[in-house]
Image (tube, rainbow, N blue to C red):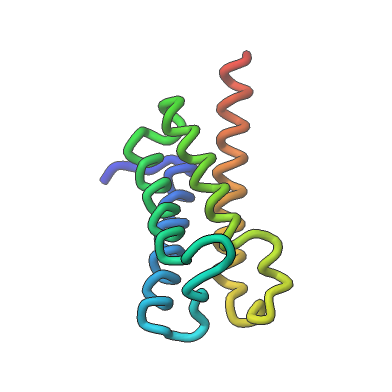
Length: 122
């Protein structure tokens, strides 16, 4: 089995968290995301977030400039759903495992991107 980089692993984590939340929304299993949040519907947004994660993986993550850009986009999109604002959400006590997991994954993505950028400078 091919070993994934930490950045690629974090992208897979985001894919899993977002897929589970999408299925929770489809099946209305509590706690599930709302169907709509201003300014978009949650289903299409989760689809776009998942697509960004998969695209970053397919472009090679850290191995290519496009993979790095897509990883940044995927991380930014994940923070819309799982960012620090979620700690103040009324459902925070129910959703904290997904929020914490996604925030750690985004942290790993950002750390690895910054680390790879500093190695290009040297």
